[in-house]
Image 1 (tube, one colour):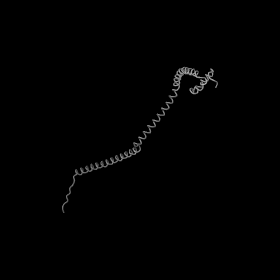
Image 2 (spheres, rainbow, N blue to C red):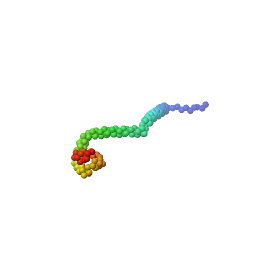
Image 3 (cartoon, one colour):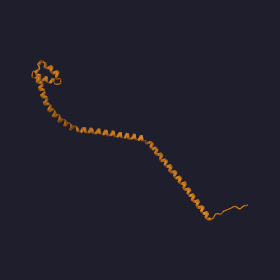
Image 4 (cartoon, rainbow, N blue to C red):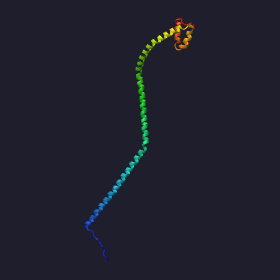
Amino acid sequence: MTPLITQTMTTEQIIFAVIQTVINSTIFFFIIKSNTVIKERLKSQDDINQKMKSLMDIFSVDEVKKFVELRTESMQLQLDNHLKKEQKKFAENAKPYIREMIGEGVDKVVDNMQSKYDELCEASYNFILTIPADQRLEYLNKNFPLTKDEFIEELKNYNELPNI
């Protein structure tokens, strides 16, 4: 028989082997733990991504645009309604002042027009007197449809119109 080669380890070698085994085991444990932490982070990130995707699906760009357009339209309608109300208030508050101003202007125009109307009526009356009496009524009906009644009354008062 051949002798087996046996080698015996020294105490130092045993301690070194144990320390190396502990270190390797610790490193292996940290690597496994790191992988677990990384896997948990990746899973958490996937969950966050899924939630964000769901949120983005709910609030798609088109839907947000529609919402913004509806909101803008609603605000425009509210503004239009407010402006209409304010216009009505302004009109109600301004009516007395406007009437006063118009009244003053109308009074001036009426005063000015009255003297012109009187002058025109007098000239027309004098002209009608130059028309033969039997033709005056026909002339008034033809040329003065709006004021013929006043002329006829005036002519009757002064017996300038034949009996009708």
